[in-house]
Length: 193
Length: 118
Image (cartoon, one colour):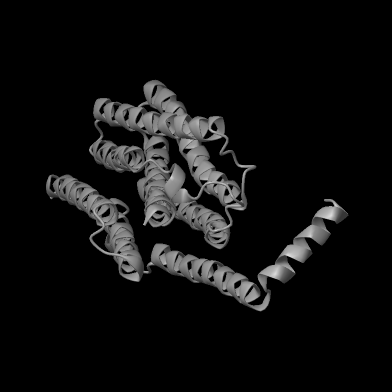
């Protein structure tokens, strides 16, 4: 094998390793979903899901995240074509959409706690805040990751190391989108159904 | 050859995006417009969520494009088995406990636990 092929194989292995990490992260979310599913009716005289969920607001959050997943895909496309400026552009758009999502989520949490529906109100709200908050934390880490990658890209441009990190980031971001689909369906839609 | 691959990738992202938006809106309006009720509604939105995940896996994560041996798919399926045991096992066990413990028993148990302190 020539040097380039060796590097490609090494990158593929690293990306596969990252995929395995993502799969274990799915199991973490599965435990939180199981906890939520068990506790969702234990409202302890506090509010139930349909009392506190603002569905148009949640739909907006969902559309923001879905769009950010799409722009993340466009970033990968630009990276594979070796267009640095486009990579930075789509990375920036993904960051802005992700930031809007996290801001909306924090605002929602602040309102819930302000209205006296904090995580200490009932088992339902404890499991709700843990599940949705863990997803929000992942998104926040993803935003930090975008900033770090942006700095790397500006200094070093597109090489096999930076493109590998971009590929890994895209797996992470799409995976968070998949987790949100389940939060949207199981927590919010089934909560008001 | 070099030019067709990025175009195909772009097509995959665009169709994935359009499909995911449509599936999300379908699930949202199925709930808010009260088109279905009860078990039927839950079945419909779960089916839409599964369709949504398949769209994301194939159009965004390109799972179908993987060359053999399909290690990513193998790890994904293993994860799904663990996930299934975790989620359905938890629900099964907890429902069974609820079934075998009457509300009165539960209340006296909780009072006992509360008076014992944490």
